Image (cartoon, rainbow, N blue to C red; front, side):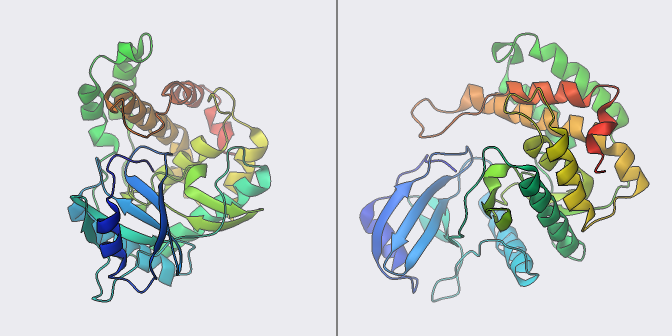
Length: 320
């Protein structure tokens, strides 16, 4: 969520007029995140999210996202629908960008989730995975394992981001290339289920949002991404056992991991940490100075990478 492209009032009014959602009352940019231009749109018919697609989201992938969210909503998962206009179109154009008007869901995203909230998030992830087991859609994971070297190269000199980062990344890429697993259960995953992509009211999940990294990959990889983002301190140096166990317990209430998946969790978590370290480093270097966007510090994911590399890392995934 961010604002890279601004919308003219007349263009916005014309867009909204295609829908049965009333007329525009206000449209305010949302600064969090780094991927798309997002606005909180209020009309006489209610609240909505207007998203203009930028950077890593390709317009050709939008039909996949529309279909995916429709499938999940039909399966009972709490996801926001991409609204269709009177002609049945969900994908629009405005300000030279592809765009969608998206259902607004109640709830707030968390900064410091409790163990109970982590358990609810784990269960919601597991329920989403069950719903996706029979889903026929596929999409290459452009931020998956085989793309990490190209992200590192596109960033430039990693030592300008953090001291000695280039050598650390080179060594980790070599290790992951040599040991990355194959044959684990896979289907479309969310791939970015951070706390800011989950809406909650109390201890209840009311929304899973921002599916724009969703792609085909190991379901256990999705789990470790969620573990890395929900169970750690803000600086990434400490994994809270109560939150980690609650998250894993919630997931286990919906999905039983195979023995191979369980054994692979520490390595997959190292990969997840490297993926976010690299993309945050890339954005740290390349985000325009005048963009209304919050750049994210890469260093907490370096700390997670180091923790998941420790000899006792398998214990981080216990749930009892």
